[in-house]
Length: 451
Image 1 (tube, helix red, strand yellow):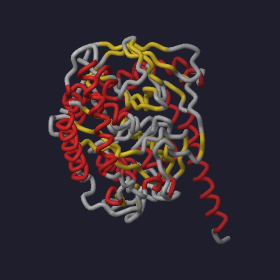
Image 2: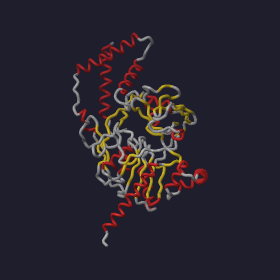
Image 3: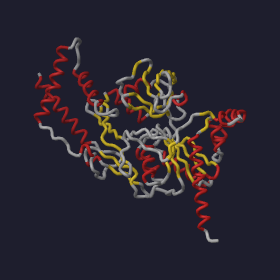
Image 4: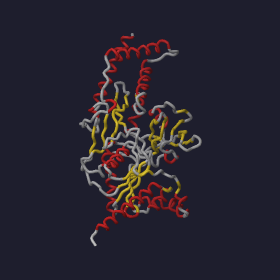
């Protein structure tokens, strides 16, 4: 019996290895070879005898569980449990997906679903909110980036996997779920009861022109149409007179890698590296460069970042910073810089496996390190009426004229904050910084002009 088990496990292992090696990235079919990650430049050679010993250990445990456990067990359940533990031991993002979980992943990428509108990850062993997405139930309820979800419907989330958390948080639109969070600075745990809804994310949330021709674009996520929508808004603002830009990537959880690259290349010359990936093997190394797909902008640029900026946002911010193309303002980003590949298995299950990590053009690893801002400014949450004594004006704008002002491209920073309903100290600092840069440039040109 044991020999049969060992033989079956060896066959399964061989199939898994073959499938993993056969996966080719859809984003770039001809990767540019890079050096593998330093700590794995030499692949450990494991003898067949050692491999058989480890498999034998596993089959011994499997046989003992089947024969001596208090309740009857099935091989499939035990193997699935072992695979879940195996993947979980690697890192917070690698997972074994049983057939039902794999179907959930397909729903996530191919259709609509009832959810809360948050991006989550396992950070320091805790289920953590990367960011609540703009204008979603989670955002409106008051969840914040870096909140630690310690309970879902009263059940403790310790040792929960990402897929298990997703299953618990999702549900039919209109139904409620209660989450308990631990928030930095809060004296006690906070409960939020949130109504699920169909999550439809609009990539570009705001595009405005402030005083002194300073443009502002709020990009909430990198979707398939984000580069085209970004180009449209940039041209519209440029026609209106924009000569400098604030790109707001705060609480942007990422999205499609290709879209992030295409957004970055709007501000970086053609032929420059935007991001690279590296894994254990040289063939997993890929380089993504900017292409001459459209107009290359050279005007002053400030990129707003926060601890809720992750993945694609960090790729854009890292490239802008490395080439000194603009100034990063805000707080350190999340540090989600690993690439997961979903590998289907023969029975309808799949592996979601971390295969490589992102590196900025200068070679900095993004994963678990994040991107530091050039100008650090903590966000200070205050309602606009706390700053402005004209509370009656604030109420009028918010209740009667908000929709009209949202459609207008030209506005003042003050009016914009009135419509948003809060004083944005980071945005104010960015506008002041661009005004200072313009003044410095104008004075410099004046001093250099002949008398």
